[in-house]
Length: 122
Ligand SMILES: [Ca+2]
Image 1 (cartoon, rainbow, N blue to C red):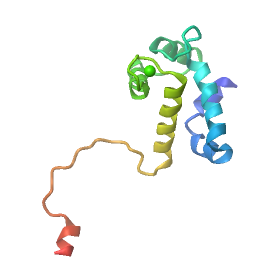
Image 2 (image 1 turned 120 degrees about the vertical axis):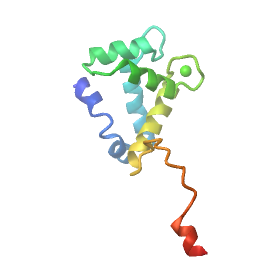
Image 3 (image 1 turned 30 degrees about the horizontal axis):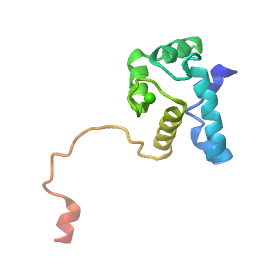
Image 4 (image 1 turned 135 degrees about the vertical axis):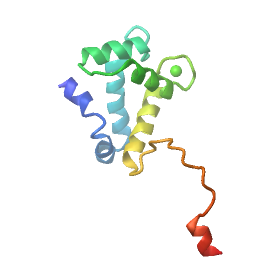
């Protein structure tokens, strides 16, 4: 049960928020947090994330785990508190909701040359 729950997590973020509202959503996030945290510290650390993903049968690369921690770690202690985890998940879910998804620093910003809009105005 818990495996499916986590694996589908991202898929049903948007509809989850719509159905149960922000508060219920946070409740679900807290459940997720507890699945991944280091029980002794009450934080998600790199080790607990790695171990628990492994235990849950999720195949996540070290790189991705480190990225997730860095993304979410707001106070710079190298671990995610429950608050930081919730904020991170909210940010991820809002990416999923917007059609353009914030993906991609494909910096094609070179051409300030012929902007068609500008041409029209002139
Ligand atoms: Ca932190």
